[in-house]
Length: 192
Image (cartoon, rainbow, N blue to C red; front, top):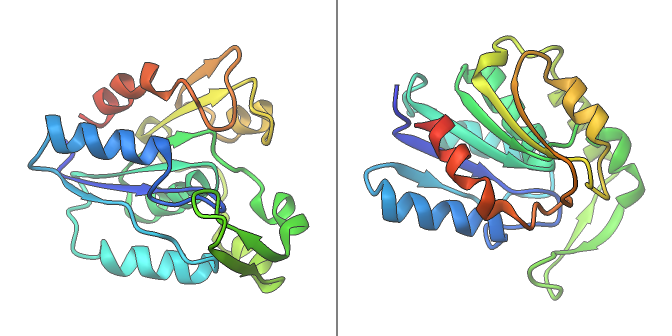
């Protein structure tokens, strides 16, 4: 079934202003104007972020909605997909954010606006642990674009997290997927 509602979840310290979020938004608006698009600014608290997202998509049709998530947004997208049964595209998804983000406790700045600051609370680590899922229930619902050249996350952990899913493993690349324009067509094709 074609996607009628599309959610995009950005990564840690990122925003709806990320290059990938803007690229997907532009393509959806141009090529699929009938699709409901939502890319929220996520609060720092994982629990608050997922409560906000799940409340706002509560009325979305489960069989024709989908989610795209980048980095920490990929971890969140997995939670959304496992909870709703929808399709998910993961872009260099965070696999163990509770472990990896523990070193960022304290005041942080946003990538897209260094004047924007937030506090990453120690309690957020437990919130991340609470959102973790076991093996994905429907591997066919997932498409992951993973770069071996990711300087932040281990590509082996990323590919190992989604057995049976469709995975596009890039030989080089980077965490930001700077060459995302080369992969966006496949992403949109997967989402139909």
